[in-house]
Length: 115
Image (spheres, rainbow, N blue to C red):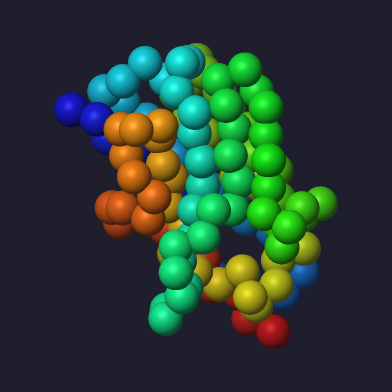
């Protein structure tokens, strides 16, 4: 069974940091493109960051220079380090995996940033 389990969300003040984790199982992690999405209430699902199997990354303009995506293939985990957080980063964050798990699907992890 393909599964992604997100963790690491929480409530912090603006300027703070959080590190999100996504533990994957049920598919070949090394060959799969991984991504983080987010969805705030009333908003559409938004791509935050993407990392391909060869390590190529990209970021939404709104998070460039503040967020960093990384992989640990041995642990089958994808991380999202989020620094200099802003209130507009408040959302539920979801992990996605290639064609296995679509964007903004599952429980996600809540991130709340207060001003």
